[in-house]
Length: 600
Image (tube, rainbow, N blue to C red; front, side, top):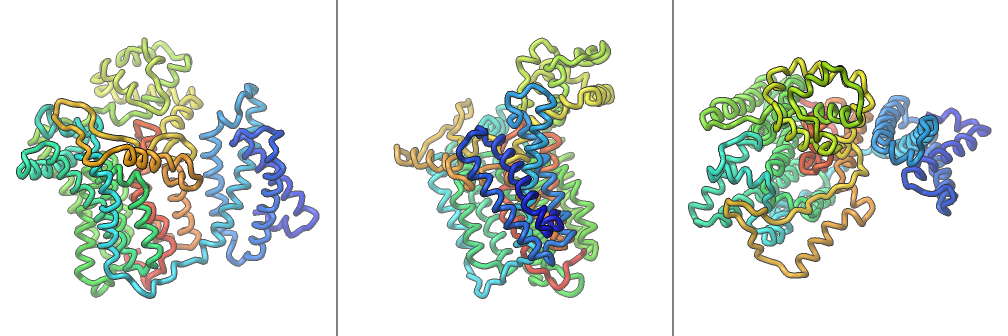
């Protein structure tokens, strides 16, 4: 971007000083440093040397850092800068009340952050674009089996400590359905509830004990999640990934504590995340190893296995979370088009997935009298935006107030409204007249649109508050700190098989390390994983691997559904599919290109 200026000596130092000053301003405001802080001259000098080194490197490697790559880096830098300003505007402006000064500070901080990110990404792309994973000379034959058992081994202490499982209110609600204490509901996916029921029934047949039967499902879930990892490792080996990389990935799953916690938690999000990893792995194998003519490159058996796993995992994605269904419907046409050279196989795979999902969703659920989630569940963000307008005391017309009062009692709306948490507003609507809203959707669509056009600032802030945890790294929330089984009438109770001060303290330390260790803490951040996901796509584009973008599509579609309808701004388990498949996403741009990338 500034290469031509850097080549002119009279301007080079001046540009570097300007960049360093604005970068210092951004970091000082973001880190809440005083202008008199002793670290400011140190940071300024460091930034100067940082910008100087990268500018010289860009000039030296101009054959790599082409205009096309510069434009990709520029676009991603603008995106990250925009997210930085959207998430941190109130923190950056601090106690400034004057709009003019607020705009100056935001412009200065945005400029400085952009300089920092642009140069950091320049350095990253200079290294990443020419890089390809070197093929492994020797593949360890039993590494997938090793990964399966090492994950189970590392997760097993959590199983013993949390025996028979971790169960939150969502888990208890599903268990009450299994015990026929309450009617079936698809609010928590019925297919997942039936999976729990099947494993629980098998366990109860042998043990006649509630806790042991729940533990039967928990152990099955642990095996399923570690099996997903093992199959991904097998695919990485097929792609000739070095053993050291595979071991590093195995360590990510085996040693990061929230993987172990989620593996023993009865949540729909856990097996759904495993299904996303299976689906992405199967998609990757079909992409790299299928052929338009003759036998598939990885052999008929493995190709058949990939197709079967693609179907099974696709069905799980459609049935184990409501947003998975919409993400699959969005992705399917693009996937079919991308693999059009194997059109018969592609159509068969997607037709089978959609057919099974629809059979379960319509006739089977109707036969079992499964109640469907209400309309209120799907409009969390519009509810929050409308509530924000009311809470800020904005002016509404008598007609708009009349529409609102037909559905909701606004007496307590200011007390109950919580930025980033839509459940209060959902329950307030349900306590009013949700049936009127459901029967008059067009009226309330027009109300939502009219208020948004009149008060876009309130809508934007409500949206930021409702989604910020999924797209900005520096948001505080806990990850994997749940314990035990909440009291209920089901008879399920926690019976730890190991315990004592040492076990408790070790678990506590492992959980807190994410808040204590720099860089390591990024593994506990949905926002940082989202940025890494975007970077992986950008690197693939910079390497002209446009065809590989299809491999990111299912994950991107899931993120999009969260950004459209999330009920909570920072619930890690909702974004757990991204965390679980992240190692594969990060490697996708660096695999050697096959002789023919099939179907594309």
